[in-house]
Length: 237
Image 1 (cartoon, rainbow, N blue to C red):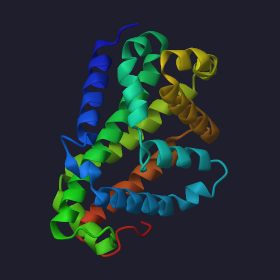
Image 2 (image 1 turned 60 degrees about the horizontal axis):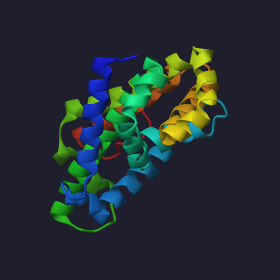
Image 3 (image 1 turned 135 degrees about the vertical axis):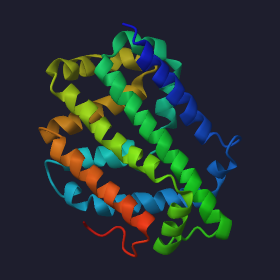
Image 4 (image 1 turned 60 degrees about the vertical axis):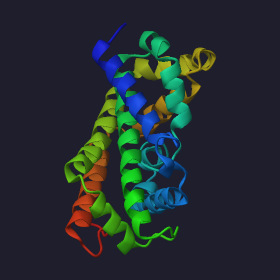
């Protein structure tokens, strides 16, 4: 079934994500400071998620956020596959799963765009790959766009809500498992794996509201503290 608005959104987001990650269009993609920044952020996120990672019920969902959505996971193969087989996706995937994929791609694209902006500010002053809190916070503030940062955090909630809605439909989980072989044949294996991981992670939660809302609240608090010049922006609220 065709979903024109969702189709256009996916096409535009995939194009934006490809553009942001293109090392010819944006040479900073080859800069070692970008990788150092992403490692710094991944380490910080894992520390912020420590309580979730220690919880048997929440660990799988926390790992999914860290690896597939909000960490330093390379999603380029997944997104290239999506772009290549978008016509097939329209026919074989439910709209709810397409919406979840679109939200995940938007979060990925926006997060990488911000990483590039912060990297640009970092290298203005030093090419050092050692990123300390003061240097990071200074670059974060200089990169600016606080309202768009809030939107980035809002996307975390939207992705979680989209996946949570699919969990409430047991048939979707069955369809995902049944479609593994056809998905591989159609070139959808990366997307299939991503959606299955998300489905299983949120099914284990038994209701994502408190988990997703807490993550969003924490990340919004971190962003607000960074913009305010708080000397300890990563402390617990």
